[in-house]
Image 1 (cartoon, rainbow, N blue to C red):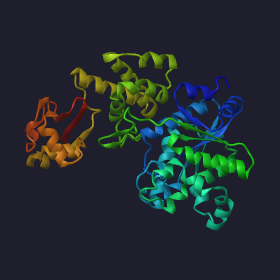
Image 2: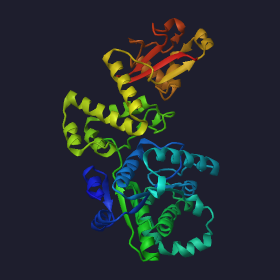
Image 3: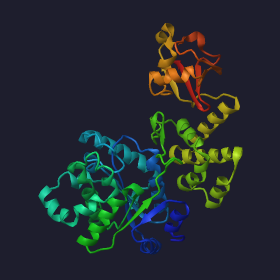
Length: 411
């Protein structure tokens, strides 16, 4: 192993907290370490929020370490209270299993699971068959309720009411770490900084029960300058699945991030050398747009492949350059009969998710925030038919400065 991956992660801006900084760095520098990151299967696709931890896994694997991707088939049935003001919706086993299978396929794009280079396991394998009394005797005795209540993840739920159901989550995640330590000699858990309390629980449990060293490391959470988690748009989450967020929309999300976040995202979410990251991050005013293009292209290339990144970039450039290339734009289709009857403008904006509700659509239209085929349209009660198609055979709607959407007839 050449450069210590701890130094790479530190320089690129990943590391937020470490249980034993010097020991972890020394360990990563001298031997192959098995580490794990958990993914609760709450949806059928990973999101932009997961992407940062996936990048960390890729850096670790490149440096010769062995990742375990732990799918939370068991823990998802409880739901992590961290950062949540309300209890999670309880999901069926079938839905959770389907979501875990989707995660497995997606993670395989980024992580090499062949020949024991990485492992993928599901905590449903041991959590769902637990004997509760035995679990309390084996694991529960090592947890102080007083100490748990001081954890950030529980503190913010105390006012609304924390159920005993969720209170078990920390014990379960800690038990996961213990099981992975016993089964695969996993000695390091990685996760977002909001997982710090849960990670400490596992580190402490292994040290008490096994008398072995165990470590935890947390990463920065991607947030806007206002402290809101990145990876959300008006339409909802930015997904890694191209069926849920098209490569074009994915590219545009990163192309449009705040100027102050460009350098941070280049360091965390691309493999560009840090000299180049710093050079691009230092660009000012209009030139920062070039850095955003590089960022959007590099991230889209990692997630969707170079060809899709190229297409997304060309589509974006041609739109803003006036030479319209539209095949990669988000599109909504209606039947010939619907266009014959006329489709009202408000319905179109809501269907395209350019507005969150009919009242939001009406407000956006009357305030002059929408143009149709390059002409501003403020008539919220207007209906569109085939007569409104442009010469290319569709209706192009633009909301604000950067959101484009096509409407055309179903093929």
